Image (cartoon, rainbow, N blue to C red; front, side):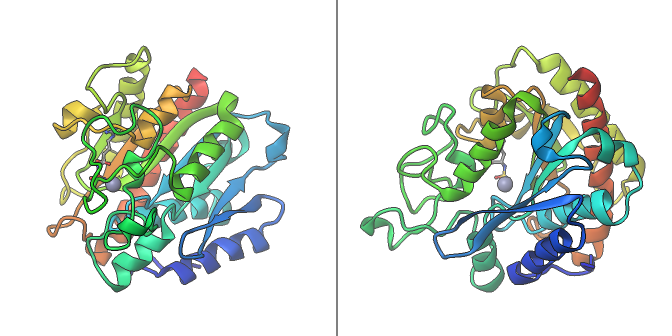
Length: 308
Ligand code: 0X9
Ligand code: ZN
């Protein structure tokens, strides 16, 4: 079992993911999707009480830690695995949905943030000889939806460098492929970020609303309410709304916009609560944030099933 009192490095999390797949072969399928620039495995779990490949149920897709420094997003994803596999308290949610959980979308960046530069955000790829000095691409500017148009940079040294082209990064291509593989039945896509206590929905590149805005907002509120029932007053209450409007900046090439653009009806960015020091959530709050966020995921999945 993984502890929720400290942050773990990638090898520990990788072992946990492998161990779950090994111990629950009837429920969990490990997908070793690809290798990163630095040679780590990009791995995610397919969780299904029947056969995932029957394609009979709606799918909920959750990814975390595409941004390296957003450490607290990883325990949120592994907690979801725990509640679906090890300690099932919502059997309906497990039975009625298939789940894809991708707990560390950017293990190279996460490792660099843990060991070398706490506030590292991007991947670690060297995309051309002239990016050797400034490696890495902002995964959340690398998706192919209005790519490289707003809130993004063409300077490889910038924090929000969108990459030499859309989907230049293996990390974002894997998420693209997950979405593509199950598109017709993905009822909910959540990408977990930190921080800010926000639930954000499309369109984040220009602040306009999609035709699904009513559903997006309604389910967003339901998720925030569910989190609130378990939340500590220590953290601010979640704000729900359009990504560009709530954040007060537009940014293109983000995954929640992309997922929605290809047809996922309910697609959100979660910005988890932050500690007093911004991206650093005090480890004493890891378990709290993991359990309260799970309530949001539960609410979102249930509602997505009704609407689907
Ligand atoms: O800017 C981002 O990539 C996200 N915030 S973060 O602080 N985690 O970097 C927000 C993305 C919001 N979504 C869109 N702009 N579509
Ligand atoms: Zn982020």
